Image: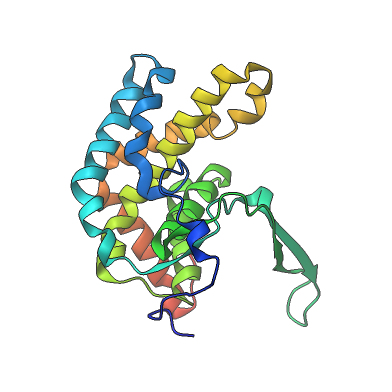
Length: 219
């Protein structure tokens, strides 16, 4: 099935979760949880991202290619197995995916943005890692010009979702703070850095890193 064809299934309507807070198209819904951040610079950044999302992303949704999003593709939900090869001692391959609770109807570029955010949190080179993830994704599904242009803001938006909802959840379940604040340990720093650098500078890093794979040289 080509990616231009829409996915059909008798139960597909159950994945149209219109007010599901973890669907990236619902970033504006974060506004009702902002009180959990208090009044500080972090909240100001989130408010700016939400406004930019309204101004620049909402009108582009109809131009994104639709799909079913896993919605939570992070290192805790990916199973890896190793094997030997003639050229390397260990070759690692994805053997399975866990946790489908956050599935919803969305867009290919949403899945990529979500994955980049989680890989940034785990990487020693958080800005560069976006380019590596992009290269892998586009080896299967190349982004359109519109999707590429939205990627930076979508990654920022996913950071905001994770950070705002973590702060909100901590108020409800303070006993789980250590787990709930995993993203926040580095997430605010990454979001601030991306925002300070701006879309053009971050995109240059991502796109140049991804392009390096075309010649077989990873940065």
